[in-house]
Length: 331
Image (cartoon, rainbow, N blue to C red; front, side):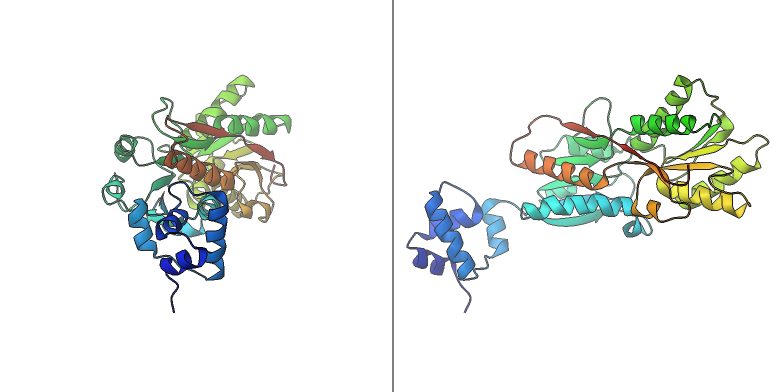
């Protein structure tokens, strides 16, 4: 027979109210009593009614994760690593993770507040100027943006030092003897792409290197877009000797085009990426890249959501994580 709350109370010789307080983590219970109840729960394999529990404490025990709805999104190693960090912290806190792909432009995030679907939100790869972000920032729902940076500090976010990372990449290539460096940027609607392009340009100027507009092209954080952009660079009368890409998938696409045109990496062109996805180590040649701590991004963002839920943070909070240069064969 199913073990009830009354059975736990009878075994531990306490009231049902005291057992309920331990299960729902509410109210004050003496430590010795709490341990006795927790032991009985484990021994008797008591399974609380999760729906009733949620209603009693007015929580869903669910964290929502907003992700872009794109083809093959779950094959994206960046998303996978961030989600692994989110899940780790969520599981540690006894929470489920609910994936919420964006369904349309100007997605209505606020509906999750009205419907009380989740206790908090982690939002990944949001676009600058998204009107929904303004709405969610003015609601009581705890939220944190991942890989998003706002210069006016209007939003809670966790990001990496993308500007510094791009500068590290340029300086590395320059030290390797490259003065003609091209750049394939990502989506300019995303702040991390804007910051990486900014860092690239600043580093080129700081090192007195030529900033050739014909060598600075825009992709879409995809292999195909970089493959096409690299073709335009190769068709030019004058070419750079090194290509810095705004993410690893684009760097892989650039390498594919270079090879298809009969050239070699790094002999003819050095190629560098950004992110350090798992695939970067196993492509040929292995990819030199700027590593951002994607798993840690997910962990830090989710922990901040819990801090807000538990009233440990009541002001807008921003955190910037460091990046690291990973030297491999491609540059």
